[in-house]
Amino acid sequence: MTRLVYLHGFASSPQSGKAQFFYRRFAERGLTLQIPQLDRNNFKGLTISGQLEVVEGEVQGDPVILIGSSLGGYLAALYAARHANIERLILMAPAFQFPQRMRELFSEFDLARWKKEGTRLFFHYAFQSERPLGYQFVEDSALYEGEPDFRQPALIFHGTRDDVVPAEYSRQFAEGHPNVRLCLMNSGHELTDVLEPMWAETAKFLGFQNT
View 1: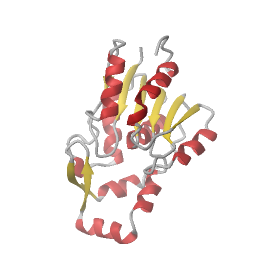
View 2: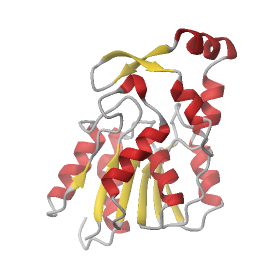
View 3: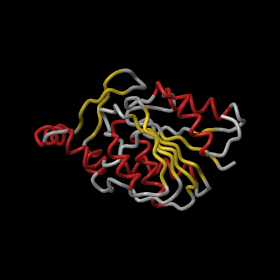
View 4: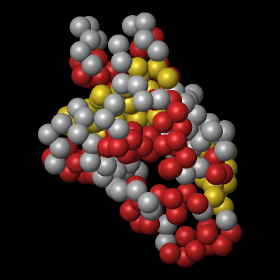
């Protein structure tokens, strides 16, 4: 089967609950889910460009199915829009409109302070504590489009109660992309309470005989 690569979310890691859930489910079918560390153990220096370089190193031009969560979903969409070797995508609460959202979530005062001080603290789920992130993250994000126009078949999961990335972003994206199937879930941003239903839909999408 085509190689499988999972892209974790912002301030997360390969040990995230969703990543490990899908890793186990694929392993039960004798398949390996590769889960790269997207920040290369340097959260402070994180950028979208740097994460895409990690994806490139993992994919290496091979046919690949990309699975991504939140910011990882946005990264998967960006990468697929630029690389035809990506065969399919499975996106969970993808952070569409991410560059725009960065400007909406932080006031001009907060952005100016972040830029002046050089870093800002964010809660990092892998460490369960705050870690500094450099302002280059904001500047680099502005180089990318909010809605990557990929054309590969895709399955998108989004929680109707998502208070981090509005489900409306995925709904609008799906309406303009006949290659996308949208599954709205009665859940929030993490989607950790609907893992089994997501796996069932994923298995169908990938053509597995039994879920």
